[in-house]
Length: 148
Image (cartoon, rainbow, N blue to C red; front, side):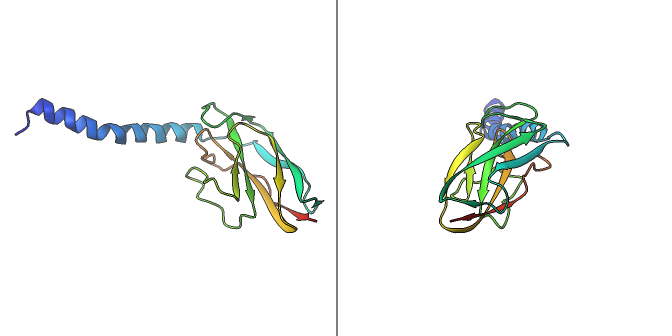
């Protein structure tokens, strides 16, 4: 039979990861709020624009600041570019990185994109320091470009 002190220590060890996860989640919840006036938009290209196979996408943000992933600051986030995404990912979890959801965790505000000819959609979503969209997601309008 275990001594009460050993049992207490073992219980604390087992609960520690759960308590840490709950604390981290609560912290993410607190930093997940964004100012109501925050606006995310694509500066260029413009909606409906014809673009070459390789082109630059410039990100715009007002009412908030840009901070790299992992840097926890109020009223900041970093960009995620969604390319040809029809069904939005779960906005309560970190955005998954894929060929269609590109993370800019370094705080970048533009990128060069290469796409095959045809019509494509582009949209920005701002993520907090953990890649989770804010409580009320900050998203740009979805635009369509035609790659020549």
